[in-house]
Length: 496
Image (cartoon, rainbow, N blue to C red; front, side, top):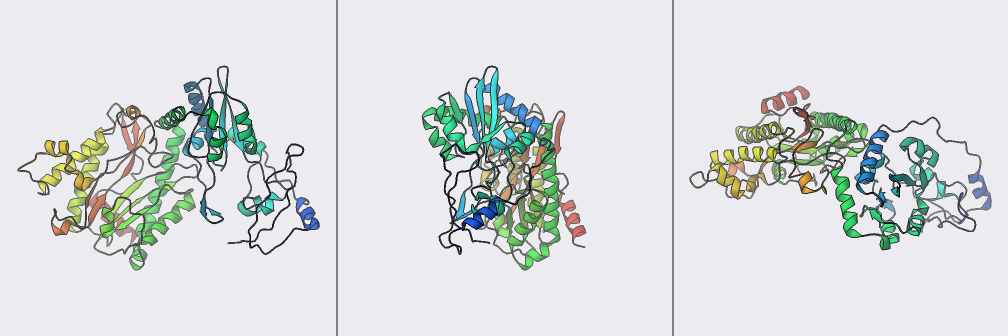
């Protein structure tokens, strides 16, 4: 990674007020260059072609984002509303994690720029919204080639004029946002946790309880997806199917290396067809499949065992799929593996069948858990002479082996709408446009002495992304086989 940056003189930035100087551009302590000559500074300021982009059209989600802002405005009349995108975070020393904008901000703008802020100023009849963004890197003070976040180091930012065309909002300089917003003492709500500097500057205007109400509302605003969002989730599922297909084709290489080959194979597809993975890939082989969020992915991949792969591609617009398949590494289930797999498949079938408009959100979970409880009783893992299925479910005894809830909302976040009100989410009635996962599982820990030895170390989960439609549901990830015979045939077709 290139490391040399030179120290820069602090000059008056283009557009700054008279007498106002910008922050000195930081340099590495042990950079190889010393001071910048006047001649080099002058050379770097001139001789550059005009690269302003013209004829730009609004991004595809711009009209949908405008509708979402209108709903936000109607919910909080007379109050200033502030939604930050977030800041870069240090990974180590002077390197940063890849930036991922806050979901609340992306949902309302379509923009993904670090340090950005959406502000809605209260006006008669609603709000006047504006974006606060960083401008293009400054060529007068050398930022574009001297700053670690300058254009020649990390790439070009859109100009404010370009951003206004792309997002359909007026744009202001985010470097002045804290000062401008602090100057006006109007009732203000801010989404916390993304921009500590802005929170500190506005501390006297903010109320933690009111800010939490804003976060809850914005989470609930994402519960029902519009047609554009559903299209993005379809695309995420299509790319995810491609990623799973890549993994099956390369299972032999994973056997020769480790679970990390699987992780890397899926990640390659995510980066080629989307922005990234939507969450840390779970590539859990053998007994690792009994750990729900196994993301170390450093174990062996052994023929005869199962691979639980839980992974999702995140689109360029940050919508993610969330799909799980449990695959026989050598292409064929053993009789016991198939028995456990079929139980989970039947539970998922029951769960998916319960997803319908007008039904309770909890219905799919209850239906799937009932099937698994019945199988655990049938297999003798729960004593049927003591408990019937109703009592098992009442006491939650099946949870020793089913562990987790059977699904969650899906969208910009893999666990989308997590801050929404309970009455609008887990205790709500399903509506067309909601998208959720159905993902039952059975997990027999390697050290579980309550089950026969042959069960120990076996974990199975099957997960699909389900859209609630006007007359039922649609499986968005249907491109991946689920039934055991279909899984084996699919794997055989990919491996010759």
